[in-house]
Image (tube, rainbow, N blue to C red; front, top):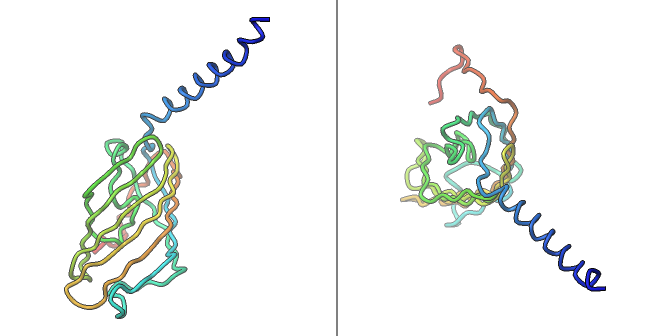
Length: 172
């Protein structure tokens, strides 16, 4: 009789142990090095100062980019992996990536836009994929401030990065 009464406790302890094992599995989760493909779609464009946006984009615009995640960067991938090369030269102002969650803020500079551009990222990741929402907001000295929302889904597509095409024009 006592054995039957203890069964729920034993089952509960076993489940708690399995849950702890699952958490332990993600505690050191990192993205895998290799070639990644990111597909993004603009989901919102809002003028912040009621003037035409300085960054030209429209809801529904889509883009696909290929990027390389180096072994040295798996704990903190280069910003271009999440925001693409079109975002400009970006650096992390804050960065959190742990247990499958990603939150970051980036400061970006673009040659075609004078002023500050800030991008916030929020989403999730696994070793071979990620899904983030990117919100870009401009702080310009003149008119054209804009807030742009994007959904970005990335996936690892190859274990090795493709060699750059020597015939391809360098990015400006």
